[in-house]
Length: 309
Image (cartoon, rainbow, N blue to C red):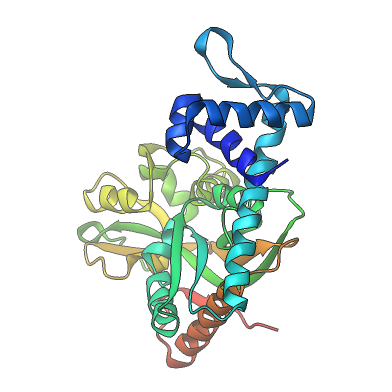
């Protein structure tokens, strides 16, 4: 089994088309097909079903796909790590983060890291914690900022708690709540702008409402962070969001919830793969940035950096 064969296999699995896969890999289609056939012979099982021109994965192909992706990602990580150890002034950090963090303090931390390590490439994948956990497990990310508790029983991840943030009820500035706090049961009478399914904030909001004994009413649902905030600004309803995302949005105000809702942000990586030097450097810069912001009192309102041991 060769890495190139696995790369061809993944290309076919993702495009579901041998010719398109060959174009992606910049190789002649007969050559790609031959390598796939050799891989199937070595493994002793067909990987694709080619009935009536439709290319689909067989059960063996389905089993191989996540393993192949992880092996290819690990091989690329090894190449870059060796390059770093050879003294090259370059590298790469593949970082996952939730939309609220991308819209909040992450940009400043990344700017600090880019200043300190201008030769290191930064790739950011924005998504919900569940998607980011899956990407980490497949080896597609080096580090990820995720929300605890993990919505996964995958034992291969290491998490390090770094932040705690308060959730608030966001409303248009001209419709600000009359009191400084909003009780959960008051949301019974307010239409909510709700995130898409699989979003951690969606689950946190629904659980809080159900514990208060009611099902919330949605004005609109299915958005990502920026869309939800814009919908609230437009007066469609209110939304439960992290307090940090309201910085720089004068059209919105946030009222703390009673009882208070908080969530914990953790930095996660795979347990079975040592983070690259570039990833370790990013972790150090991020923690130093949070420590400095804590001492200077510049963290967004409602955000607390957790001490590291």
